[in-house]
Image 1 (tube, rainbow, N blue to C red):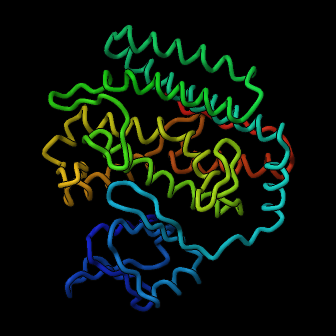
Image 2: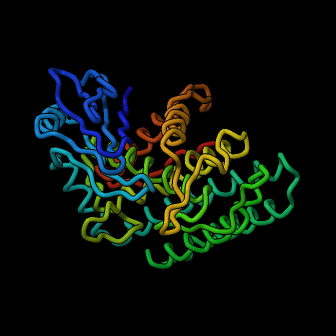
Length: 330
């Protein structure tokens, strides 16, 4: 269990010897050996005892705090210990040309993944509209070398996402499940609820992997550096939205694993997964991240693939060389 998710509102994570124990109303919901945990994700109103906090910090295990609807609050860590890597990262960020090239690379990779997902569904369902939008995305990506600022590159990313999400609903094949556009804070339909939750979980994966490589999640290249914003993590998130979050969302709805009955609407209009459905979803998310797939002649999981891309980024920053993330075939 490399990732321990705690979703029960009002529960508390406590230290019991060399274990983390999740308790709720006098019941023990789970007891996990610390050595088997790589990351702790607290979703919603969950408490963390002082003793457990100290144990996690000593073991260098990051703790992510987030809401049940997919809002990221922050991560508890011991900080950045690889000062040399941090200095390389800052130097590269301050080089405007280098930053622009990295920004172009990120957006080109994202649009490539968007194209591949749409083309896959266009082939499987003989949908000419999806194929047409994929062609438009390819043409849009071709304009990236002409963009002379990060703001212009970000504009291309926005145009690409608008095109992509304008037809994303055509990939959904189950009666009663529709998607009319991306919405969040709060999500107003089941598909957006799953997308937001998937992206938040992926953000936690990215932040943990960046910290493991000694990179600062807040110093990004595409996203502007802002107070309390994990800009570099948001940069890397752009690489994994389609290969993980979007593919998983479409698969769960199209296979009938998730239906409208798995969701509830709050008085404020927010749509969220029911407690039991959330636990089931987390199981499928973990399966998606840990199931090996063929990558050339090798077998690799999506979690390993993500870590490899971040390790490659670290090497590029430390050597002032260009970064070329590897795309996922879809």
